[in-house]
Length: 122
Image (cartoon, rainbow, N blue to C red; front, side, top):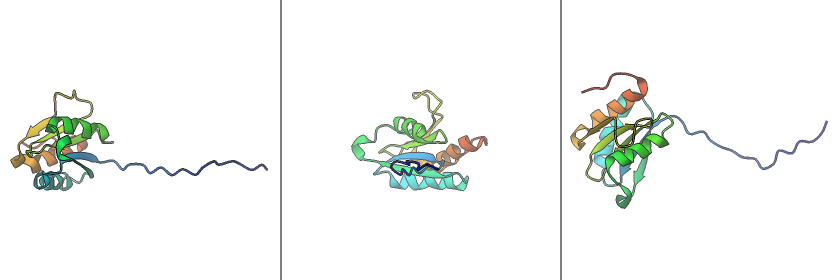
């Protein structure tokens, strides 16, 4: 029986499935509402805060978030609090849903519903 060379031990942790929310740092109040909507639907979520200068428009943030999500769904929140929900398989310039800060909780619900296959709320 020979000795096996295992080489350097590597540990890789799988990223758990979750919707990714990319949010401008100064839009925390809107972020809370989006997270509440997603969590009420029972879908896991991961937040990535974006420094103010890098917080482009919500659609660009949402597309990047969708591509980073193992569930292919992302939410972007820009500096003004506007929100956007995107699916990674949709064209970047055609987001699934958009809305003002007043509808942030609804956007969270609908992002989760894209994952679960339940019809979106209006």
